[in-house]
Length: 227
Length: 212
Image (tube, rainbow over all chains, first blue to last red; front, side, top):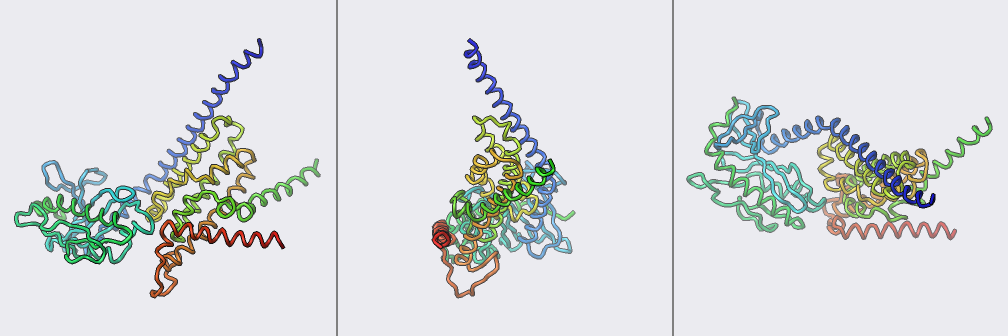
């Protein structure tokens, strides 16, 4: 009799023990993660903002001031207030005299491993991409991540032709990625051997983003003012 | 009473250094136990990636060993593996945030591999085989030894692969421009070649030592 009672009792006390252990450890782990998150969130946000600011100056050579604008529902640019979050944000860069020198635009698209986020500089007078920077990517180290470092690849974006047609509605020549060494025109991206998918992804991201954003920018360029 | 107290500390100390040394050489996680091969092969294409990955893994190993050893009498054995994974995943998340807070650049270069520390069998095996059965002090020494041994192993591979694959070391060019990069060394296949080479070297060394 006593043996059966013991047998019956043991599983319940065991599962209680297991439950307390798992819940206890879970709570402890959650607490640790929350504490770390709280402790680092401000610094991470600050570093990311700083990295973005640095990237803006990198993709728009020769600018001295920047100002962020967002695209409102009517398709017009409005100045972005601090801590304001909007879906489409562009960063206008100005010279020391306050003239618009270029616009930094973010683009994103699927790469080989994960979504690649890039920032590129657009010169509205010359209608060229003048700079390019990868903000976020998880491409294969040593291969796909050449899109961030490879000098030949990055030289594609020093004066890339993104001219719009006469009524400013779409690109004259879509941005395309070609095989390494086969670039003949200024709107083509010279691909990387060993990083075909990643370099093609960059071409697609730029093509999509420029086709969407450049007509809007050209239409509303007078709204991008320093003050 | 006093003699017992005097006798015990040195004995403990000897054991602890033993736990530390064994991870470096006799039970080196990469070259002897051949554990955690996924990061060993994947992240070692440059020396700095290898170093950062080794240190991040060592941190997770150390912290999870401490916590698991502290809770070893509290965790029922039926749910021990899930508890260990939970604890390991927590410290991986923590190191992910910490690396982001230290440098966005470093976080960018390690990318997806940080989250993969969770499934590094080295950490789980030390939790199961050592930390769950030993005191916190011993577990710390074990984790430090294994962590340093693992970092050393990754560095051995990373140095060779970066030198031959991109003629540089820690990002600084070592070989002249005429040197033709061995592209295969930075590809996954190069990881296997280099690992095989180091295993060969270690085993030759070991067999010589035992025969002499």
